[in-house]
Image (tube, rainbow, N blue to C red; front, side, top):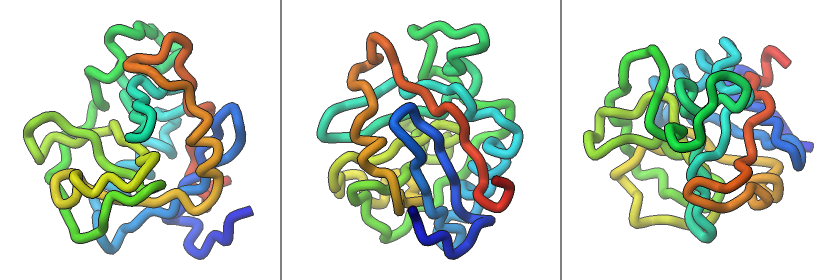
Length: 168
């Protein structure tokens, strides 16, 4: 069980294999952390699939528009959308993209992050200062490691539920 120091800035992500505890980094990327908490509290991340999972690299999810396996789901469109909220400006920092860190997914435009994010399977330092890091897995990385691989996976895993620890 994770030692949760700040429940307001901790995310509990339920996967089929178990709970992943993510410590958000509001001092590093406050807008991205606020966005994740807003979408988690609204239930927008619940049942959203991991649509791009590359072995040795990362697992990407968070397309609340097209990735909800329980609502108008189309695997071909998963990963092409975001949320109804405006895109976020980049919050690049010196925090490295180490194994277990959470990064904001975006298009070629550095200021296009919205709801999608990825969890690094390995240290991916080539992403440093190019993608916003705004959290890190502090417990349950073995559950992330168990996510079905593929681009997209044939039978994608999903985030069963995503909650802010303060609300759980």
